[in-house]
Amino acid sequence: MCGGRGTRLDTEVEKPLFRIGGVPMVDRVVGALKNSSIERTIAATSPNAPETQSHLDGPCIETPGEGYVADLDAALNDDRLSQPVLTVAADLPLLDGEIVNRVLDEHSGGSLSVLVPASLKHELGVSDDTTFERDDREVAPTGVNVVGNGPDDAWRTRDRRVAVNVNTLADARVAEQWL
Image (cartoon, rainbow, N blue to C red; front, side, top):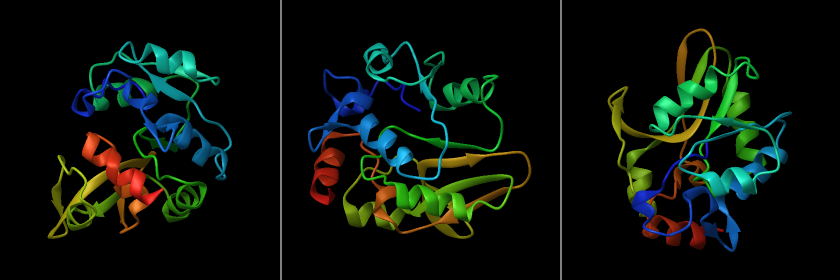
């Protein structure tokens, strides 16, 4: 998922192309997927990120650019995809192949949301705009999910590789510290 505007990042460059440690975030995510057991990667871009689409050398699904949920829905309806599908946000610069494989190992059918405790986001000093209660604990989505047919499940982890989403310049500084 790499079609966001990145307005909170407050930079001239498209969010997926924002550099962490000198490398565009989307390249870091694509590299993590290549270093995992994932066999095929298709980027979901939007009119909000034309330079990102030009930057990527693999197949892309054009989404409407109406927000993450609408774009995800459009991507999942593309004929090239069959479920289950691993979805990953482009703003996870600490992602690597090992944690991607761990997510896949945790998936046992249906859909899987990868969550981190909201307290971990606070400890790391990163933004946590979207938290909610699950099983009497405050958690935050990570931007990594498996979408499939069947029951919904969740995996909670304290792994910073999925906890650091870069939405602000302060988040970017935290990501740089952990590279």
